[in-house]
Structures are given as structure tokens and as C-alpha cells.
Image 1 (cartoon, rainbow, N blue to C red):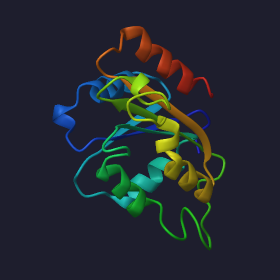
Image 2 (tube, rainbow, N blue to C red; image 1 turned 120 degrees about the vertical axis):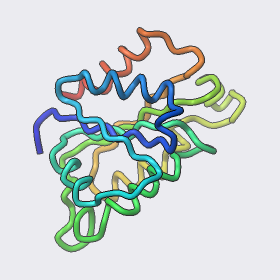
Image 3 (cartoon, rainbow, N blue to C red; image 1 turned 180 degrees about the vertical axis):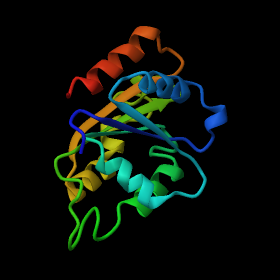
Image 4 (cartoon, rainbow, N blue to C red; image 1 turned 90 degrees about the vertical axis):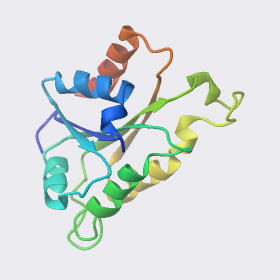
Amino acid sequence: MTKGKVLVLVGHPREEKSVLNAEMARRWAAHPHAEVRWIGAGMLDVAAEQAAVESAEHIVFQFPLYWYGPPACLKSWMDEVLTWGWAFGPNGGLLQGRTLQCAITVGGKLSDYTLEGKHRTSLGSLMEPLERMAAYVGLQWLGVEGLDRHRMEESDAVKLLTRITSIH
């Protein structure tokens, strides 16, 4: 594990159509301690993904919210990469000492994701399955940061990156 290294896994099934996630990935790529990997609909090299995780201290799942959860490509990444004997189980536990945080983009307003908002729930509540997964494999859960794609300003992206990378 490289102290301070951030691995950003951008889970987006259509990289070529991404706007906000592509912009955030570009900003991450400029960060001296970050590695950005796009997780799309294609096949995964599980060994390469596991090596990338092993080299990082901090992991960020960045993705657009799809029907109240991560897109299928990120779920597939978890299913294929977080394997028995590596992430958990006998001889597993290789994720201990690392952190996990989600950076989620929404198509509407972030204020819609509150108990009083349109969806009557928060992004944090929607991501409880990821929080449980993190605990199960030994990752320290750092929570969720939301981005409103229609109302995001340059300063919002910088603030988000600063909050996530301040864990160094």
C-alpha cells in the first residue's frame, strides 16, 4: 500500500457520454496522489484491479446514481474483484487499513435526496449496502459526497476533491 495514494474507480457504463463524471475524473487525474480507473461495461482484468486496490490507501467509488444505487458496472466490479480469499475469508482481509468513500453525481437536485425532498431519502441511506460491504471486507467507510450536475460550479468540484483528499 502506498501511503496517501487515492484510487478513483469511476463506475460509468457510457464513458463517452459522461459529462460531470468525466470532468471529475480529469480533475482527479491531475492530483499527484491519484490513479483513475474507468469501470465500464467491458471485461475486467481482476488481477490488475486487485493490484490497483492493493497499491492504494484510499478508494473512491465515483458514479452517477442509477435507480437509487450504483450502476451495474460498479456492482459487477465488486462481484468480480472482491473475491473470497482476497477481500474476505481464509487468507483474505487484504483491504484492512484502507478507506472507502463514494462521490455520487445526481441528475436532479441534491436537495431532492433528503427526508423532506422529492425522494424522501438521503444518499447516505441509499448507500448503506456499500457501507455494509466496506465493513465486511475491512474498509473504513468515509461516507458519501454528492454532486448536483445541473448546479455544480467550479468551486464545488474543488471543495469535493479537497474534502476527499484531506484524509492524507
